Image (tube, rainbow, N blue to C red):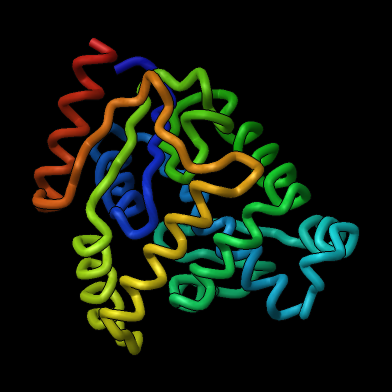
Amino acid sequence: MKKINIAVDGTSGVGKSSVCDRIAETLQLTHLDTGAMYRCVALYLKEQNTDLEDLEAVEKAVNDIRIRFDNDIVFLNDKDVSKVIRTNEISMMASKTSALAPVRKRLVGLQQEVTAEKGYIVDGRDICTVVLPDADVKIFMSATPEARADRRYKEYISKGIEADYETILKDINQRDYQDSHRAISPLVKAEDAIEVDTSSLTIDEVVQTILDIIHKKVD
């Protein structure tokens, strides 16, 4: 297969990262998890007690951040934050901080710079519409809030993270609203993106469905 970029957008908790990991391994691509990048920013701003209303302070803080990936391990300024950035609190905060202009400008620039030479599968909220509008393949993953809440609940329990299904469902609905109504780069399905409803599909079925789409588009 020729060197390509694949853009994957979708709602919170739909399983983008897990699916993209599998596809990246199958097609020998590099998976760039932009959601983890935004969670790192949210965690750092929280730890620094940054006033989110002070955009100059936010911009300064974001410029101090270094993020790197080592397989499944995420490092924020050389500290392993893989587990803490996946908590519900940080996920909800990331929805707010990712709407801030200095945050989006900094991270979108980094994402476009990294993927310029192609060979990436990138997932997030605005990859098809903003980060990689010229991606070779565009996918929009969706699922009902209830299906996503059930998956996230089971994921947290399996990782030893305390969780409550009803709280997760409420937060997912709230995050859906925040992501789709923010002023900067709201979550929308790109006109040329192919939607995959994962509500009743296993991860194997989702991966195979998207692989079939990729091969059809590229071949």
